[in-house]
Length: 105
Image (cartoon, rainbow, N blue to C red):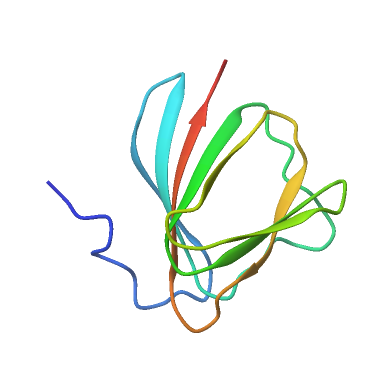
C-alpha cells in the first residue's frame, strides 16, 4: 500500500510524472507540479482521453478555443482525445498533485 500524498520529491524544478497502475488501455498516474506550465509553443494533442483531478494545490488549463478553467482540490474534468489543451499555470507556492487517468474509448 502507498499514499498519493507521500514520497513527493524535494526537487520539483520539473514536473514529476509517476505511473501508479495501468495496462494497454488505461494508465493511471500521479503528476506533481509546482509553478510549471506547458511550453508556450505547443499544445497537448493526445490520441487518448484523459480524466484529471486536482487533489491538492491549484492549476489553470487553457484550451485551443482560448477558454481557461481554474482547478482546485476535488475539481476534475474529462479531456477528450485530440482536444488541444495546455497547463497555463500551477501554484508556485505549494505542490499541485494531480491524478490523471489516460484511457481509450
